[in-house]
Amino acid sequence: MQSGIIHSTSSFDKRFYLLAIIAGALSVFAFAPFNVYLIAWITPAVLFYTLSNAQSSKQHFYLGWLFGIGYFAAGASWPFYSIYFFAHAPLAAAIIGVALFVIIVAFFTLGLFGLVAAQFKQLSLMSRLLFFYPATWVLFEWFRAWFLTGFPWLYLGNTQIDTVFAAYAPIFGVLGVSLICVMVAGAVLYLVHDRLSNNSLSFLPIAVIVLVTLCAFGLEKIDWTKKIGDPINVAVLQSNISQEEKLNPDNLQSMIDLYLEMTHQNLQSDLIVWPETALFDTFNKHMESLILPLQKSLRERQMVLIGGFFINKDNAVENSVLAVSKNYRELYSKRHLVPFGEYIPLAKYIRWMGDWIPRSNINAGKPEKGTLQIIDQLAQMTICYEDAFGSEIIKSLPDATLLINVTHDGWFTGSFQPAQHMQIARMRSLETGRYMVRATTTGPAGIINEKGKVLATAKQYTQKVITHNVQAYTGATPYVRWGNWLIVSILTLVTLLGFIINRKNKKHGNT
Image (cartoon, rainbow, N blue to C red):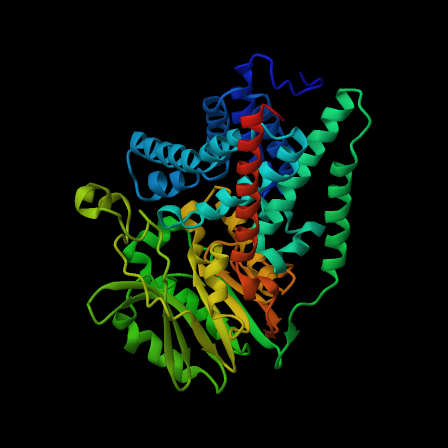
């Protein structure tokens, strides 16, 4: 029997279930807008502690699932705001819908993580905490990015954007930073276990913490990309038009007038960026009254990006950005749509939800079209939560020299979502070594540099034009070259090795 806080052969205390769900919920404080990054090292350690005391696969599964329910209920319950306050679904339907979402996501990610963690029971406690639990955790974060079209939100690595551990992002992406978080969590837990067991502190956990920290300080000094061309002066329009105003069709012309006024006041800028669906209508209806006159007012080598809706050749609607310059127009349409927000899966079976989700059944843009020509640079475009998918952004790199994201987080007014979204955008800049221009209706909009630092921004729910020079960058970070496949391959091999050793130990009755 092991001494200390972890007792692998004692009876299981059901209070561990309560501890798991509380720890999961407290994890929200590691993310924006709270940014208490230390919590990202503590709450996974609490989960690992409960798992290390579990006796059966069933207990492992429930501990992981309950942690996940707390994790997503506290950190990703913001769809409730859009469904209830703005789509006007009945309160019961909104609660049930979000609850099902949380339960399902937790089941297929952290619940399955717990089940896999049970397969390492015959391994030493140190190896589980330092290597096999962390490897499995990150694999399920990656799995969440594409399962059921993907939900790459609340990645633990995003919490470290302002710490030295963020330096791993240009090599391994946000998943690599998540791995460092959970390895540190496991190391801290083992050291606490040593201390409470009156044992001398083990060398390996200390070595892991020291090594990953020293490496991070070294990596932080590396410039993976380099400047190209002259800076572009950019004006980002944050109109602060509320969601209630935007959904009222009587306000359409006044909203257009506001954006035009803000645009004309900033015609000294090279690039002016409107947020997602700033024109809450189709472009074709406003070609003569808005787009052509605006085009004529622009000088040479000047451009305006307008978020709106495009009617394609099949008479279907796309969520798009129209790039308007003096001599030409170019279109980018959103490729990764939001399920139940822009299209309804299995729509013929649940058509009744359509009335509660405005603008549903929008069509995806061309999968190969990810960029727009911005003056003399090529920009990787994303709309809304497309910027949460790092592996998709890098498909247009290293050709693209800057990133542009337009979004409308007004659907989630009052929730944590806008702050979390900005945190995610910062990670994309760091991974790619590119500036990001980010326009949102209600904020926070801003300019992010190639190191993930916010150079200029505006507070949420304020009207402001953010102006700043944006520098294009060329070259490729290791993450741009390898994507997630490097870290996923390594962690898959580690996990398989754990299975093999565990099976061998179980056969021979060893730990």
